[in-house]
Length: 318
Image 1 (cartoon, rainbow, N blue to C red):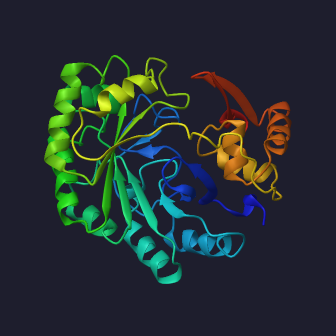
Image 2: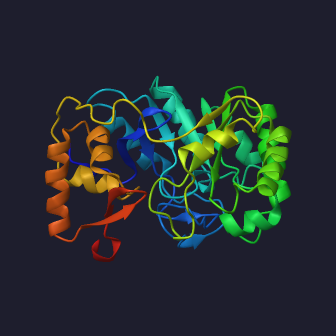
Image 3: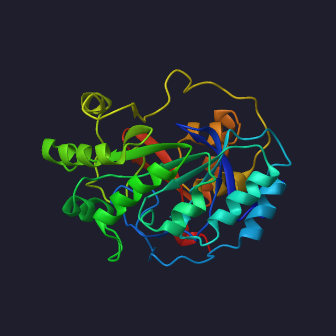
């Protein structure tokens, strides 16, 4: 089935934590309560905290049923996509619908901006895994890194994560994305750790910028620096980084075309290896498709962190 028939469901994409994750978009591109300096999707185009049915849940459900009727089941269904999924007023209805039809665990990725609202907490309690974000330990760093909507309060956001953790019966993996020279300096790290001790998540996951960021000054930490910081954080702490040991594994080749590749790139910049793993292709096949898309200006290349990424050309998308 052509990816062109899917507007809200994409992948499965290779996930460093969840294996092959089938992504779901619940809001239009870059509709978010934050405008993070490290975001690989670029600057936020619609900064909002208004919750409404941005995307019809019935349409998403219909796409999921068609998508999951073909090929192997993904390891997770990930509610993430091109913005903040909890902005969709009916995210809870979608979770219930998925649970009633499929035996696939659901992961909700959230920037935590709205977790202080009890109705948002209620809406995602039925998920299997929730991965909220906390990138700073104080208001000034929060404003510098996440550039939130004016109605998002740092204390209320942190208290909201803690309140959700106390209510949720599944696992909460708190993701912290660290930026060189901003959140890895001792004072900033100490304040962040103090907030995490208050939240008490199941796990802490240390991340850093691994794709071209919205702002060039959002520089990534080295693996060695992440390992130095890892021992300082409380509880179970993982380092989220490039997969090791299987970067060059070649999966069984399955047919895929330009539509599938564009669908994947519309959500995130990818390397050749990302496309190959996400769409179950040989890397040579993925590279051939990517070069064709570059030649027709549908895709452009950019280099970051020593890797070449392919990204969709939104200026020519129309």
